[in-house]
Image (cartoon, rainbow over the protein chains, first blue to last red):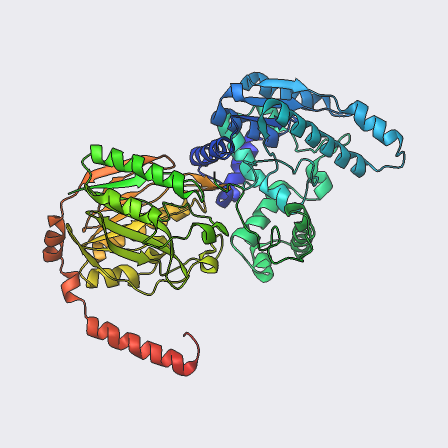
Length: 284
Length: 285
């Protein structure tokens, strides 16, 4: 994988970041965004995957290990290697951690819904984990850190009000390929760097199998489409297939709802989110 | 002459707390024998104000502005605020104060309203780019985006400015393999304009974040040869103070008399012709 990563950088150096500078910008901003809201601690869910691992390592750099709480929330079908990898990251960083098995509440609910699809179950689990993190947020006086990267946000590959929910998300402007680069730079354990990305919602699930393309492929397309603003004809000239371009552009548009607050129906002349416009950092 | 740049982090929309932060930086600067202290753009209010713009706008005669102007007895002060004009227009303004009095106010002319920026929604556009006399000689002020229009420093230098003060709120954008793109552009711009206009350029940027947007700091002072005299750290609060030799303006202009050789009549004639042809064609080019 590390040689594969290096090969990838050669093929698409435009996706590479100045890693030390990126980590500095992210950790300085993360610390400020949390502390000015009146918090000194953060809490995050640790799945054993690379995204939450990078969030964890960035948080440790920003706040120190004593101010970061990692929460493992396995379901009984979660792969055991996920838990082992999460534990390895916890050991390596020395942060406080706890494990909450979500099987009892998930099973209790789906006993009433025997017809539920794996997708419904997966989304429910993601939202269960979110409610646990927000409960622990109040308990520990710790803000919830996000773990969704830019690729996932753009593709809508995440659960609304589930893993997509957080107070501050340090990964939201990093493509998956950049998450891999920074994770390697910051010292995320090798077993996490090298495994296939998976939402781990059912057995043998991998993101790339489910999406139908690799993150490296789609990151290149997203870069040319969004960052360089190329037209469809120009994208074809770069070498992307028409069906791939269509599939991805449709996904981006279809999932815009996940990136927005709920739609509010306008009646007044100063409507929240429309013409009542303030930053979250109002007065901070 | 000793100049200071207060590369600090204002609190978003809190005039009172920012006023006290200004007092702290003024105190530091005084202890460092600074004679001219420059704050970043909108230093009294913070940047991404959105609807807070309506709430923090103040007249230059208001108590908040007067209080800070009064602090300029021992050193000259340059700070930024949302100006509420007599006719109720809000401007992104920077004020130069000396000996307890207002010397000059510059209203930002070029309001970025694209990409991540939305200034044109809230602010009126300044209509004047003019130099002004100070105890240290003729100066001019350009606020952030003003500096990205080459006509702006050109006008100030032609109008006699020897030192151009550039308060900014420049964010981290387009990080790639080697640099923050927005930051590198700034230094290239400042270097070139300083050399082409044979003038000192003082760029004071802020630090801190607002809803995830980081301001990179990296405040910089360029001499009239286009060489960087000093640069502040990135992403950290810092008082960047340094002695500069104003006589370098004389020497650089004698050595390379670009300003003397400028042909204003030609420029004006051609601009008039261009404007006329655009009017006739009813399009911009």
